Image 1: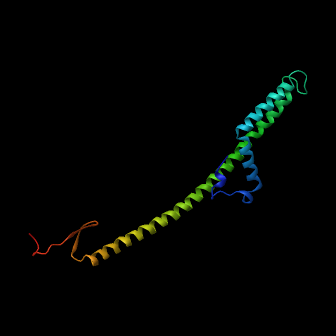
Image 2: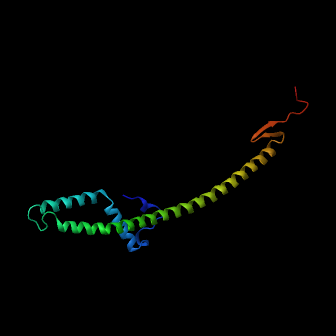
Length: 150
């Protein structure tokens, strides 16, 4: 089963046109193993029934006519299905792009907040430990007075 229907960026249900719903139905039906086995089964039944004196005796002229008609439509059916698949892919891509832009804005806001918190923590540390001197990033050392030095 295709899980793209659950994707929040893909239109489903009443948001689809009749042609889009038909393309999804045909693609999901004809592009499946049950369809392949059903088709082979029908061909085997046709050949078995018409083997001796059926309505379409060997070389199965009527069957060949039907298969030729199906082959003639197959190209159009494949193009319609591919067009629908492209439409679904573009909807997913647009949704991903909008989410990416939103996440980028949230990351930038988080970075600004993190820098503000780091600055406030440094100011608090300077007020709490006025005798400490900043040596490196996040590292402090106590300043020794000349009297207490050994």
